Amino acid sequence: MEQVERVPLRPAAARARAIVPSSASVERLSLGEGGHRARIPVEVQPLSAGIKGGVIGGVAMAIVALLYGLLFQKSIWYPINLLSAAAMPRMATADTATLRAFSGTALVLGIIAHGAISVLTGLLYAVILPMLPRRHMLWGGVVAPLLWTGLIWALLGVINPALNARVDWIWFIASQIAFGIAAGFVVARAQPVATMQTWSLAARAGVEATGAGPERKP
Image 1 (cartoon, rainbow, N blue to C red):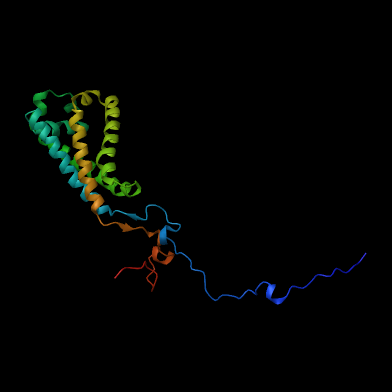
Image 2: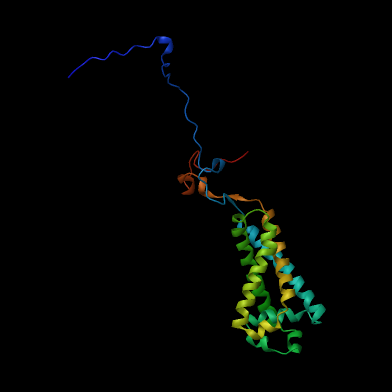
């Protein structure tokens, strides 16, 4: 049954104020600003720093290895000949006199192997270190060398037990730490490069247009 209900009308002073539209716009964050939707790492080390770090780290490691050969084997050729055993299996089972003697083939193979491994490891440092927490020198100079030394020790004991028995692992660890500290220092000190994730599609595609590229500081 229809009926009428009377609702008292509030006075104007007690009523809610009318909503006044605002002309202010909402401030929006751009991709990467303040970490907004940015993937880590935002900046990476240049690959050139990895190559340079690998070379310098390789020199530091070679100095430690040659020092071991001079002090304990009375020959700087001993560690070089032992390193060449990766490509010359006969060196792994050679007698001490042979390992202490100069070998041109072993020297060339040792330099090539050592240089290639050092540069590749330096490149890995440039790629991986920016993704790790702070204290890059601790990660690159101590943690990483200990991890890969343990891996090499485990694999070499299965693949080439004769060579594994000839390696002085204390000095091997020292040489790896020398490499890690030197390479890590060079890579950590390099000027980082911003990744392309905050660039516009046109900038990533290489389109040359006004405002298409990333903003550059004067």
